[in-house]
Amino acid sequence: MRIVLLSGGSGKRLWPLSNDTRSKQFLKVLEGEDGQTESMVQRVWRQLQHTGLSGQATIATSKPQVEILRSQLGYEVDLVVEPERRDTFPAIALAAVYLYSVQGASLNETVAMLPVDPYVEESFFYKVTELGDVLDDSGAELALIGVKPTYPSEKYGYIIPERSETKEEQRYAKVSRFQEKPREAEAAEMIEQSALWNCGVFAFKLNYLINLLISLELPIQYEEMLKQYGRLQKISFDYQVVEKAQHIVVTPYEGYWKDLGTWNTLTDEMSTNIVGKGVMTNSTVNTHLINELNIPVCVLGVSNLIVATSPDGILVSEKEASPQIKEVLKDSAERPMYEERRWGCYRVLDYTRNKKGEEVLTKRIIIEPHKNFSYQYHLKRNEVWTVVSGQGEFIMDGELRPLHQGDVIVIPAGGKHSVKALTELEIIEVQMGSELVEEDIVRVEMEWEDIIQNCVNWGKTR
Image 1 (tube, rainbow, N blue to C red):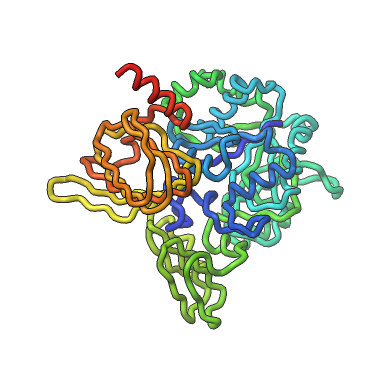
Image 2: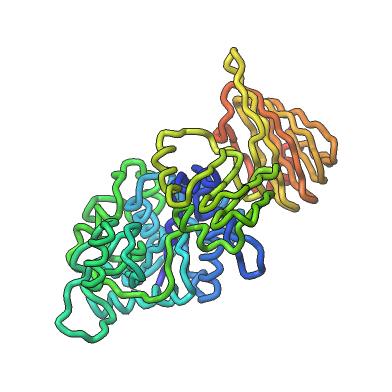
């Protein structure tokens, strides 16, 4: 079996902590095994490791999430990266073609698709491994996992199985239909009909999807699929595949499962009411404070609230009203003010634009020990770095020098540069230019050893 974790989309429902590059699965607000905070994706990957499944798992993601995935999970994790976001069917098609033409997976192999952020017990992943046998026994095109509901929720979609003539417990059942987020009374009626919560997990034999791509005249070789990715229709897997499938079965799961997609559901699973600098009075009940700013927040005498602060903004909301944030911010196009990268993180401190249209952006950058930037240059901006703390090595246009607290570095547009932290390195970076965007980075090399070698060779040809 191959497992593909789908990690896409941008973050609005958990604003202001989530944004276009830091979706909900990357927020470190859950308690890990060692008492340290961990994200949903770190929790899921740890569970896959414990159940022996991480070696056969691949994460399908988009370009903006690659750096944070590397930061949180490391470089050993297998990634398939969309050239651009085009909905779930193109993403799943790309992953299937990757398994087939790059990893050499057998056409008869079972591929299980999972969201990257389910909040489940480890037993859930053993249930996933049963999907191959379910496909073999049933002859179905798709096999799904449905969670046995514990109450008539209006938040989840439902899978309604066909009625069985026998009252014996079945390993799987043929799917009759799907129902998206019904009213409570309708959900209660469906539960009486043995309906299951749709947790977004499904499996198919690899040849099922490869043959579908052939029928759609789409590439089944990975490199060619990457080249043609932009012409794939933006369509969900549900519309393109599930609704057209003739034979779908579902197997029930009775363990704990929850979608932590909103503040009111996420805070239910947090082990502490305060994350970051802050205080709450004893008269404050069922309120959570998550503060990413370096200033204290006081919450006094109010209950059933979520108070969340980050460089992207401040949210104060009743917990039950918090899901509305996605609709409220649907037209917002603000740049992310905080990002995690493979080398550390940065936070935007200030941004201005003068009357001439020139932009000035100030960042606080933290580079973790022994991590480095790529060897890169910019076309539309100059930079000035001030080293606040730590030690490192800095290279520009082939010249290497040590970096210490108090050093000031001027980097002109076009100057090839990189830095490696020897200890944790904190830098204040001031960018000045006509267009200050993350896309204005031309990378020459990524690894420090390659950077040094590149510069040695470059110096010999001067």
